[in-house]
Amino acid sequence: MFVALLTLSMAATPQAAQAEGFAARGEWEELYLAFAAAQPKAFKGKDGQRIARALQKGCDALLATDAVMAFSLGEKSVAFSSAPEAVVCTARAAIKTDQRTAADDALRAGLKHHPKDGAISLELAKLRLEEKDGRGAVEVLRAIPKSSKAFDEAQTLLVTAESLAREASSARAELVRREKPRAAVEAVEPPSSTGGVDEVEEDDEGLRGPGRRTPPKLGESRTYESSVDEEGRRIRQNAYFRFRYFNAQRDFGQRADYEGRVQGALEEARVAARNVMGVARESALDVILYSKSEFTLHHGPWAAAAIAGFYSQSAIRMNDSAEINPRNQATLVHEYVHAVVDELCQFDTRGLPKWVNEGLAEFVEWEYTGRSRPEGRYDAYIRQLASQKRLPSLATMRDDPLIASSDPGLLYSYAALAMRSYVQRYGMADLVGLLRDVGRGKPFDQAFAQHTSSDLVRFEESVRDEILSR
Image 1 (cartoon, rainbow, N blue to C red):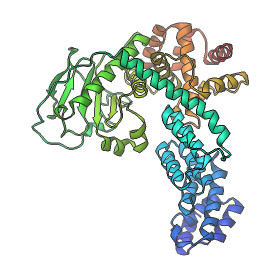
Image 2 (image 1 turned 120 degrees about the vertical axis):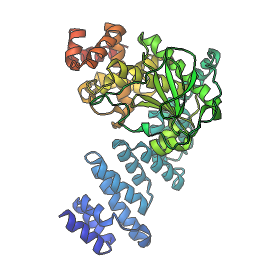
Image 3 (image 1 turned 90 degrees about the vertical axis):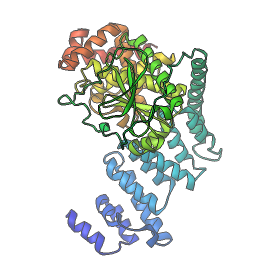
Image 4 (image 1 turned 180 degrees about the horizontal axis):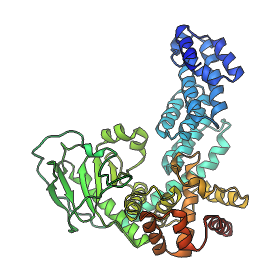
């Protein structure tokens, strides 16, 4: 059937009436196949708009049940006619399928066609808020005209966005006030060998068996020393970090100022995490430095524009284009916590629920920035869900990345509240012991019961009660 439909779609030019017929019958796969290869320029005037509306209907219909197909239909609808409704549906489908870069691109492109459209602006502002970009959200929301139907909702969100922007500004001022001396950066000569992209970036880096990675074996000195690794690449290292470029042809002598700021930011992240957790990473942590173009190529334009770095495959990967501002500094604290958790779990976190890993990192970030509750609308929203007994179950936050959910901000905030509750009840030292037990192979539920003399159901109930009592 699939092959027949594909052959049919390639054999004849589909017409607008066919699109409307498929939509009327809810035959969304047939609709997509019929127009997947169609060139919008081949359809004149109203015919293209009719096809676009049919494709948009498919996006709306499938958004809740099949986000992948919804995204495909929405994307094609936008190609035929960039209607605001299609742009918003495409972005929402992209977010549900963890294509946040695609969502950002679709919304920004939509605003170029409809600069005063409130629905598109609202969706983009929400995306900015989820990524803790208060300034970006404020800029988008303030551009929504009073005549827009979305104006009232925009004003409500604007309060949250401005609060987030003010918090970032205050944090920046505080960091400047208590700025610590940065580690000195030595100048080194260019490497004698030439090389291309660092192949150690691949996912099989340092594997010690299923899911396990070996941390770099480094010296004990706390001062940075320059050396050459086994493949002739220049590195800078101390007992805590090992810095190297993603591209082996560049070295620290070329970018000394940037490396100095990165070193200072990560040293601050290490101290901040240790102050809250009582432990820091014992083995040195690889830090891979990307240029702006390299980071964009490997991790997408959204990530390149939004984050300073992230932890993956036993390394923090730094974005050259990102300013080391207070928001990004807090993000690095969050990512450094992941590096600590990875080591506590013996570099195999597959047995650790996502809500524990992300919740702990978010909680430590809160402590670092002086917060005690979720940001913006999530504070009231979580209390509302708790009163209605509609909070998401921790069991549903076990395996899938929280960022891939329909509302990541909600899950991150709730996970942080859960981990704060754990620490207040049982202590951070006990939590560290729990993480070590999971790293030794003990099932999480069993380790949790042994450490708390409780189970997750009762723990969730207690977290809900604490939320309501605030």
